[in-house]
Length: 208
Image (cartoon, rainbow, N blue to C red; front, side):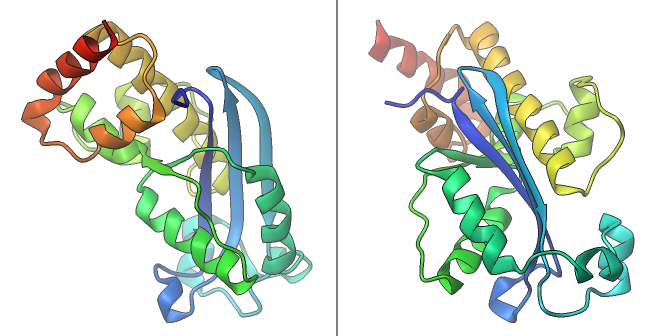
């Protein structure tokens, strides 16, 4: 059983919302957390082989000029696969990043069987009084220190990593569960909000 405090937190910036419609990754950022401590980072721009539209340029700050000399997506994703290894994975709105990760690896004839969990879905259950559950909103809600940069991959991965660690700390404080497993965090994202207290009560009874 893997503890939830040893994970890789990742974030993609992309040409659009749907790899099924031909959108590609243009940047990946990732943070390795081991035993609750950030120990390594990975960040690369990558050339998607097509131009990025002006909306994405303005949204991310990543321009076509920046991507022109970047390595191709395939090269970066091969490198990231080595960094990723067999770690459990976390992302904010994880379904988005999971789809792009799998799509880009599929182009390399590689699969991704690493378990995923979503910090956004977990936050909806633990921080039910937060005004919203966007990454920037939760960072503000939890008063997590930030340099104010969002929508760049490594900055977002760093903030998500700090949010994930805050979630684990708050679960330990609120529900007396000192060391959540990754599987427990995955289960948490699927239960009704009203069931959160009883969910952790059952976890406690199992571990007693």
